[in-house]
Length: 445
Ligand SMILES: Cc1ncc(COP(=O)(O)O)c(C=O)c1O
Image (cartoon, rainbow, N blue to C red; front, top):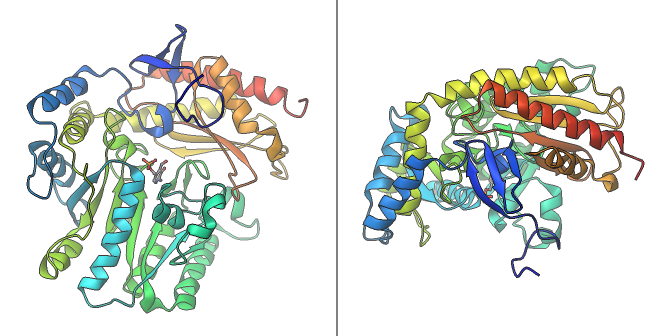
């Protein structure tokens, strides 16, 4: 019996230790953490430097309220992240989860327009098949139908949704990539028109859609078009990089590969690598200036915002990523991972697409490759694959509802940034064996 409210009735095995890319379970098994949990554990497990930095800060000064005090770790973490003013981002607000980060982004965007005298802006446009968190504001922004369903009645009508840029599923055969991007930009423009462009606060999107659709990068030019639509109508662009950011896709920020920069960026997961619960927003100077010149401060806050111990952990994680040039390793090992996954599984009759960037890869399963028909959701193919891969000694991240929140299956492979070439081979071997075993049995109960 467990008194912890686990996701399902079953008690999952306990993880008791970890070193490098491996986790050790209470029954003695060692499992490769091939997805870093949900693309979190960017440095792997058991990093002594990070553990010691956390212990040092906890011993020196664990907590002081941010209404009265700052802390050295929060100041240094913001300095490090904003060094060189990336994309015009000048300030950081730290919180404890990606969902809190999204809430802060939504509220700051709204407050900005209140400060500059545009109170009529009350709407957000987001995308279907996206995820921005599970608190009610973030859930309303998200387009993950499955996660929204029980709570629809509680979700704010301030949010509306347009199509994702998801070429494998939604680009028509009779249109080029550029035509598809054009169609999506026009759809966004039309949504601004429908709402009244002067009522829109921001467009919010994940530069590379994470768990909901499975590592879906936009086609070239998409985000430039989106940025132009937002600019034309005076709306902000909020990019949610909780999953795809902080180096995961091969650049510190995923937007660097899109030729645009956001007005507000949400970061999480890889920021602290799982050593502490920490996330945050990075904010453009003009937004901070408007607030400083108006009411003076962000009307928002949490008890544990900019928690010194969490910031100390994240600061050490980020220092190590820079000192060890780990984002370059993400690019190098990402290339290996793509190649190995494609060689091993690219011709499998039940694999429709292998896609991703950096060390952020998804495998999408289909009943039939030619028609891209999905498996019956009742078969829970993604769960079966997860279980079979775990039986082979690797943990990956499964998800159903790839296409519309109900149909489609994929799994995510997102190893820590420290992964080596030999470990990539070992991961792909285990994933390959698990996938083959799970799919061989599909449909036969
Ligand atoms: C893109 C994105 N945004 C927001 C969140 C919410 O983060 P958290 O689970 O830390 O609240 C997630 C979590 O998976 C995410 O992937």
